[in-house]
Length: 161
Image 1 (cartoon, helix red, strand yellow):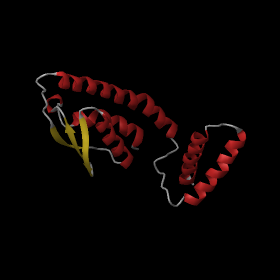
Image 2 (cartoon, rainbow, N blue to C red):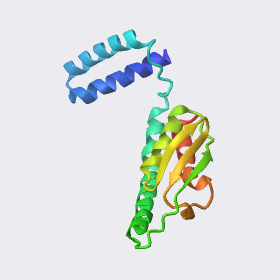
Image 3 (cartoon, helix red, strand yellow):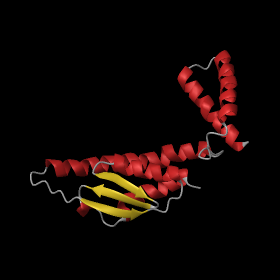
Image 4 (cartoon, rainbow, N blue to C red):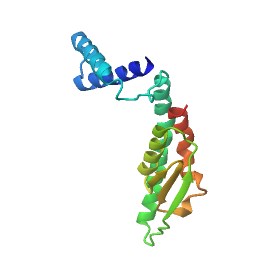
């Protein structure tokens, strides 16, 4: 039942986003269509990602993870700008193997994307709990957890149980 309700909510939210209308008639049609789609596809999709504490997770994402993520992007942009604008171009690139404590696939995906979206780093591969990360400047990295550690604890609070 929980999976059915989660799938229905996802389909209904997409209905609202696509129709961009909150008229009563369209919402009723959206509910009926969403119920039909959910009933037909309930055995195809597995939405264990969506839990009933979703509003709390969204708040954590918006007010805890997102500010840290934006701060890290700004900081990395400034560091990379100094490297690019320096005439000596001190590029000390390296590939780092890093282990994560995150368990869920979505958590690992968000971590990999967070690393890749931060300028100067790129997630090359994820193998079980190990990330292979390319960095432009190895000298700015204190230890192997300094890349993933800044995101990992916040991602765990939002996506992992």
